[in-house]
Amino acid sequence: MMKNLKYKDIQERLPALSKPLLDSIQTAFLEIRQVDRSCEKFQSISSQIPELQECKYVVFSRFMKKKDRHAESFVFLGERGETLRHVSGRELELYGLLEGCDLELNDEFDCNWHVHSEA
Image (cartoon, rainbow, N blue to C red; front, side, top):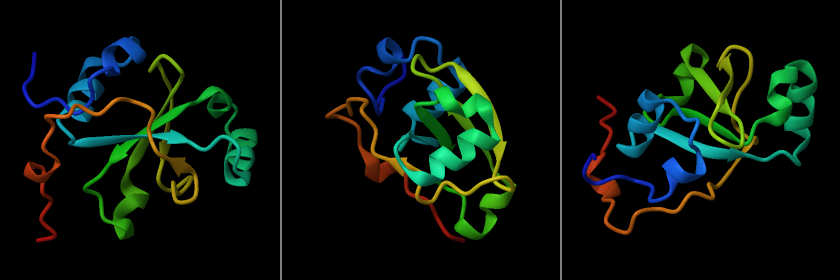
């Protein structure tokens, strides 16, 4: 078990999440957020990319600069953490599509030790 894990309940809530994604989210190398399924942007992209109709979460790099997001690949996950689709930043922007996350943060997780340098 890794020390300083970000979420207490991620393995129970997302049992189908792949180990590499789990480890990257738990160490805050990657970020997980819920998709706002009620927004107009979601309605539009899910009609264009049918695999996204069942998505609940998206995983992305918290370290990617906005100007470089076109080179990123977003991982859209279902209710149990199963990967539904990888979508390129060239295909869509996450802005306006995300809301918080319903996973329970670990009280002992120290967000400050995961500092990103803009250098």
